[in-house]
Length: 186
Image 1 (cartoon, rainbow, N blue to C red):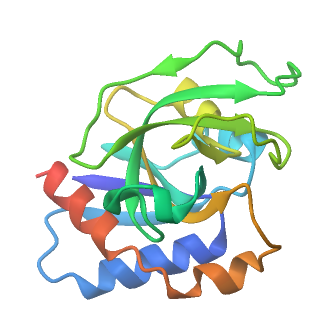
Image 2 (cartoon, rainbow, N blue to C red):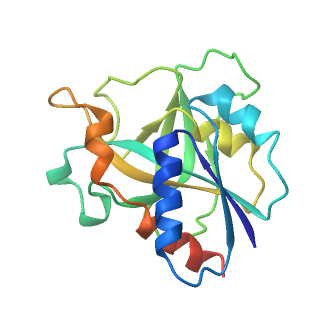
C-alpha cells in the first residue's frame, strides 16, 4: 500500500523518515510530506496530495495532565491515536462547522480526543488526557474513511516551567508509531 505520512513540522518528517529507515522489511511504501502547522496549511496540503491508499497525520501533541499521574501508555514519547476531534476558539475562518468529529480506531494505540486551536492553548480547564494541537480537526474534517491520526506525546499541559520544545523532543523516536502503523495496515 502507498501510505502518506503527513507531518506538520520538518522535525516530525525527519523522525518519521529515520524510523522508517530503521525497520527492515516494510510491507508498505511510505512518503512523508510536511504540511506546515495549523488548520489552513493542513487543508491546503490535503487537497494536493499525490495518489495514495491511506493518509496518516503523524506528529507531536501536548496532553493535559501531569506525566506522573498518567498511565504508562500516555507517557512522554508514546504514540496515541486520535478518534475524536473538537475545535477550540472557533472563529469560522475556514469551512469547518466546529461540531465534534468522531471516527473508529484503526490501530491498537490508546484512542484519545483532541482539541484543535488556532492559538496555543494555555487554559487549565481541560479534561485530563485531552490532546491539544493545531491540525487534527481539519484533518478529520477532510480525511477519507481509511485515514487516521497518530500523535506522539511531546509535552504535558499546563507546563509547570517554560520549555524549549525542540530540546524536549530531541530524544523522541517514532519507531513504535511506525511499527504500529505497519501492523495496522497489513
